[in-house]
Image (spheres, rainbow, N blue to C red):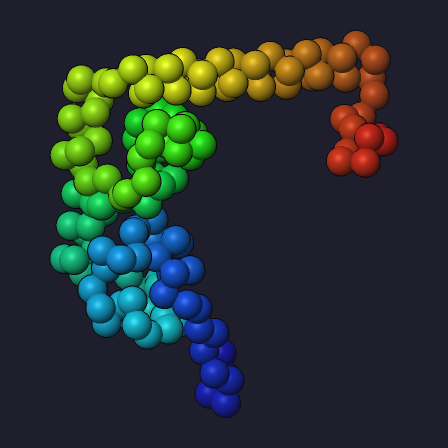
Length: 141
């Protein structure tokens, strides 16, 4: 990069999303200042203690919480989970799953199985007809 160019900056929320952390749990200095791509790369390659701890114990963002529980983000909402959860809270839910978690995990697994079935059927159809997959406009690619 030439010395006369400014480094590309991102909002703390974007950087937190790229790091997979819950922004309100990050230190104030991280939350209140823009982060350059070089800073983000340094945080990824050599994370400070606060980042390592946050990634290990949480609280975690919704998408990470949902993945750890084996449900969708919508399933968390239907289950009444509105706050970020810590690793201990997630472990407690998994150890003694409430009714909503059992139901949402079953629903999520059913959706995944159905998506795999549809994908396999489409691949089989393409193989037997030798047609290209349809693009988002419903025509061949």
